[in-house]
Length: 137
Length: 132
Picture 1 (cartoon, each protein chain N blue to C red):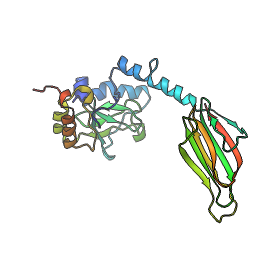
Picture 2: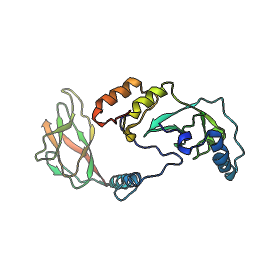
Picture 3: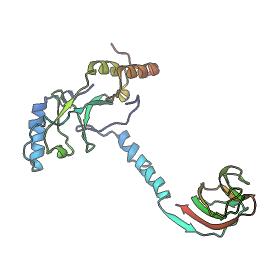
Picture 4: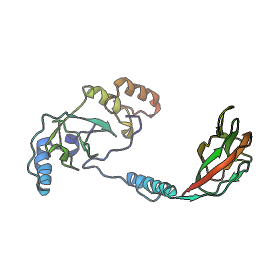
């Protein structure tokens, strides 16, 4: 056990005000945990019809974005997510090889509240196949 | 470190007769036998108390006599029998090192060595108590 450890309660112990208030009092840990958990136990789905090469701004919730794309040989999308515009942090890509047949891969990524995101053409002329978003709240 | 004997100021047998037996009778549980077969529960130190913890998450201060009855479940997983508990072989060394610490930092769990306790004491020298 470390230098610091939480207190186990045993028969005969007095529960101090500090212990109670830490976990169960106004603003206590359990209270705060419930508030945080309630933030993400609901989701709402949208199919926004978003387009490639367009910068989007997320709203006030964490957003899951799932995009699939049609890629012929040598075509590539890069996905950027950042709290700045234009977003420059690449978090993934969808790409096809030099001699590949058409493929339709997908990627799911998360966008924090208030961040920008873009599915950007890097090579060739790929096209978006599906674009679905879920907001966690 | 505080044991159940020091805390309740009685021995195990007195506690068993005065506290545990009436509690079990109130729950309609016939008097318990002693389970001398199942592995003993290992005592550990938490905030300056020797504690034995039950699988149900209940915990009791450890008795010197080495018997354990969980007051939360009355050892339901073991047919309500009294279970064995054991202190570590290094108990004296552990207590000596923990006595130097403030109460909230008197913690030891099975697997921790005396060297680790000494190292922690060295890391927190300014917080240690003056022990005579």
